[in-house]
Length: 398
Ligand code: MG
Image (cartoon, rainbow, N blue to C red; front, side, top):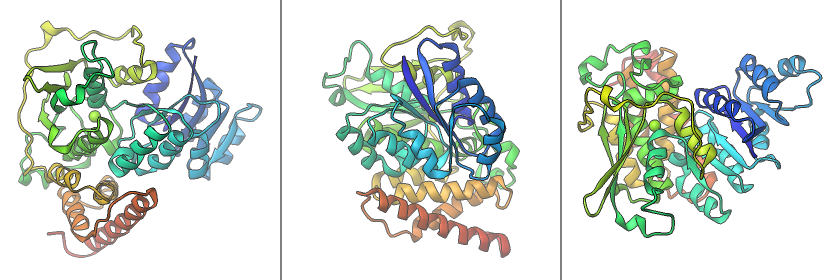
């Protein structure tokens, strides 16, 4: 039986993870849960799964939890330190890292430093500090299993029976191709993007996800983040990582080998499939979900991404090549700008304009230590905040 910690249990990935765990009580035991602020759902989850420890990030919510969970022997913690303590709980074998945004970095790193296998949905961990995280994972002999559907696809393609671990498969790979649905604004020109509302940008056509990643899909920066994530997860140079728009979200990613043979991983867009893959790895378990019916697929289409119309994707590509603290700055500036957009303080195209300004103002350094990454993150949030305040109190951004 695997002993599991779920970080971000009340988010979209967390809920789907617990859905899988609930179906296989003989395979998994939940020993720890951590959530942000949704104490209503968190209370229900704690009552159902009876973890040994549970942490809520919002310190004010812990008193409410304690009241509702009186008599239960779950230890209750709060704040960033509480979440980290759950991540490194002595009983845990596998930590599902599904906190949204940069807040996921330190808990995930803590899990690695305490030798837990990590099932990674928090791509920010790799975007901000991929080099450091992989260095520590190697030093602690920790497996990082991707939950992100594209990376779960690549992971499966690299571990097919033809390529057992240990073969020189990296040299055989010409490139990997991450697919992108294109999001809800696929056919929108720059001009059309000016009047996009929050609701339109949140309406993802194929995947049901939380608000932050839905906006990131609409701007295409999510795919840029996934390129950076892939660079570190699979130890591939940036030039071997490509993106193609595939609106149907049936092919989740592809690998092209040096002999020009290409293999793809397919399935219906249901996050529970990559989640179960990571939870059960290296085994596969039958899942009671709908099969992909090939005869019902009208067509699968592919096109190049519009990097001019969606400049955040190009910014991510540039930042991936440049490295250092730039990816952490890109991530932080974007997170702050998306937050402002979700609060309707700025317009949709302001997201990329603001991020551009912050990137241009940054003096990057090599990110060899986690403190350097965290400092760049804090600087970028401060800088972004200033620009947002100026933009919302003065003239529109140019
Ligand atoms: Mg993805």
